[in-house]
Image (cartoon, rainbow, N blue to C red; front, top):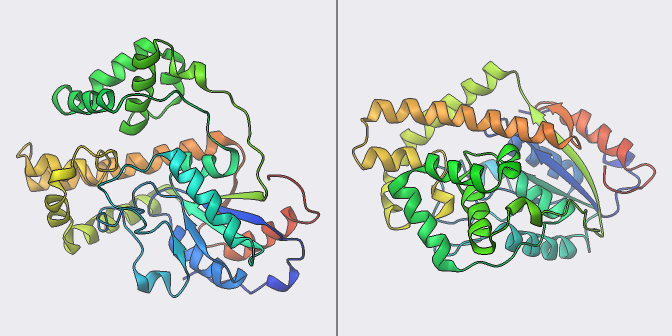
Length: 319
């Protein structure tokens, strides 16, 4: 349990401040954010590209009502897996929500491990050309029949610049970049403008970490708990939607392969844990490369409150 004193009385310049709490899977974001939200008397907005889907519960480590402990969370169970929520849609809906929340709250917490969602809210997304749904469906079909490695190789050929910077294990990013390349005949990277959108709030960015072995142990324990809670049955119920981007991810793709008979239960468990650890490592690398985050132990809620106070006095732009 995170322990820190209530320093709300010292926070004098919080007006329209977005406190971002980012970090890898299983680092302890939920517990810390609940404590911070109670201290700051505010809500939590989730920046997780899978937890917003109602049908995805166990495999996304979605916080339970008990874990949320009375703190209102947004973008948890907000959409159905029958629709595809893009980063652009999330950006629009999150900004509209923040505009409402800031009408009666000085600070709002944005928390999650989906870096693209966090960037979308804080800085805006590049405007990309629209593509045909049929092209995406074709690429997703190729993913199933040819495998991710073939699509990765095609992206490296069509856009070597973007291939050097993107997480090539992220199916959604690879497929989206290929969509644009194939639809326009131009590299995906040529449409990226690197401009920061103006926001009517300031952003204070915090990232959480733990000692690596401790984090990996937490990941293994979480995966054991997911399996005990019925992860395999949840994935079986999602078989009709297995082509959905949100299900081409760690925690689901391994179980789909097990259900297909690709490997046995023991191998599935090994891959679930290994791939989850690798995913956490990629998340940490991504957030460190952003350069805008101030890093804290996941137990240091008091330090985060003190940092928030320093970064909002005097008020300024994004921090």
